[in-house]
Length: 499
Image (tube, rainbow, N blue to C red; front, side, top):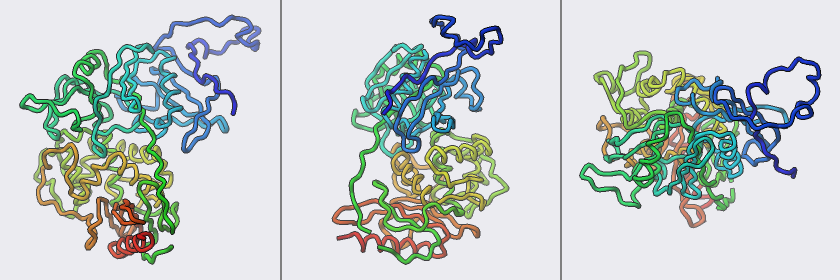
């Protein structure tokens, strides 16, 4: 393997200007010794000078390119304006891919995380480094370590406060906000990506603090460390989050083949990816209201579910059970319940409107790409359009991501108690469309149905296999008898692998 070289070098603005004088083709370093320059924030770019070899799931060999913070052009959202832009460059073909702000699977890789962090330090950036592998939070000012603190607790697994590895920016800093869902005060809360946060020790209204082992809120520091950090950070400051790759599950299945009427079907272990039975994993088909799973993901990552919004019921979509006509405001959490339990098309449009409908749909498609869903296109937030298409393989990737990082979404679909929410939503007596009649193993999921898509569904179930309990994903597209197909796939799996 080639020797690993330093991938980033700082260039001044003048280095990027053409030199048309005599001798301009003579290499610069022959005529001039290298000098040290004081960075000028408004005139800096960063360029790749050598190739760094990093193992990634999708790109085996990449290099980092950081573009200056003032001349950026690919991020329209206000919170990204002060943040650097990170680009992955494939040296085999020169293709450059911008590393989107938000959760990033690539930052689970230690080498890639370390190279990104070191590039930030070398180029004198101010940023927060959150490393869950060492339970340490570090704050760098102009590339120099300024503060360091122990991470005392993190968001509950599967809650909307659980923070995946990724690249984020600070959206706001608040002294002592109150979470109506958690029913706690969060001292010196630093919010990023909508629902992710850094804060001190949560405190109940009666003045008592939460127990050390109680998972309430996001990334928890001591009150002293949180106050010190909140006093100096600014909106737009980048936050780099690193976590460990989930250990490989070595459970092994021994396969056969079921009778299923759906045109496209899949049953696969959610933990280790073993496919128990499937049709073509890459064939694309309309997915109807299964679209709302991505709507929920984007909403949970970009909007504050603890907030209330003004409601104007959209007139261009209808829901089987309209509930927004007489409402002037509603909590975003309650909209998520309508979206996922009763498959409300109205709720999907009101949620999307909080970012702007077109921007929200753009974000849905961008999020699909970061998850590796390359056979997926979203045309609206509800799934009504036949242009909402995906594949079995892509829907499995989405299902696994939600199960591992956003499990509260599946808990809502099952009408289960949701971690982090101590009160219910604004609507009582919701009718759950997702349950499969006659099946007690249902843990959560989403159904859909349109004329173009037929019946579709994504659901998580528990089965007994080879003496242990396993969780499997059942995915259908183009079914005409959804309950029969789900039942057939579950019976097949248990019959084949129970022993």
